[in-house]
Image 1 (spheres, helix red, strand yellow):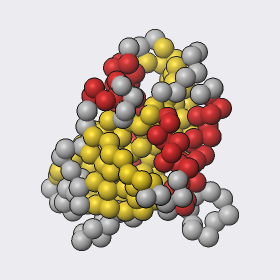
Image 2 (tube, rainbow, N blue to C red):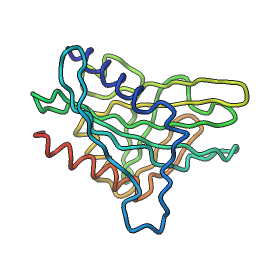
Image 3 (cartoon, rainbow, N blue to C red):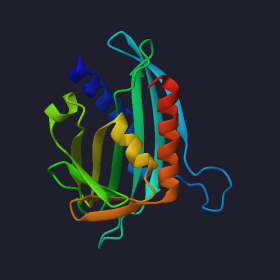
Image 4 (cartoon, rainbow, N blue to C red):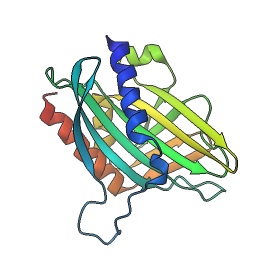
Length: 196
């Protein structure tokens, strides 16, 4: 059952984030409105009604020598009847002249000086320790990539409540700005309304 939930969650990510690196948030930095959008929708998967709550892509500066940027998305899903959220995804997407994400999925988070790592490990996901998945799609003239981490709810709350968050994977290392953390905090509040 747990493996089916994880596979469904990855399916939601793939469907919801397809081409996400091409759609950065376009609102002005001077706007009084939040510069992110969270949407909820109901879907049926294998005869079960699921509720999906997703943070639409927001631009993030994960620059290296190429100057290319990317975006971040996050989401959670739960069986509508059971109302229990066991994990949240955080995904980073990029489209750049060359592939920059590591082939071995792994990311390190630095939260107010503390650090933890999420690695590619299917067993870890079943133990609710988190897991990472990396996808790269090279094409003539560029590369589309994503790194998705399945994060237990308690760990997600630590990330969203931190004052300073730095993310590192491969040669990329970048800060999450306050606007990114505000969006993750909003998503964490919505998890709380589900009943967790």
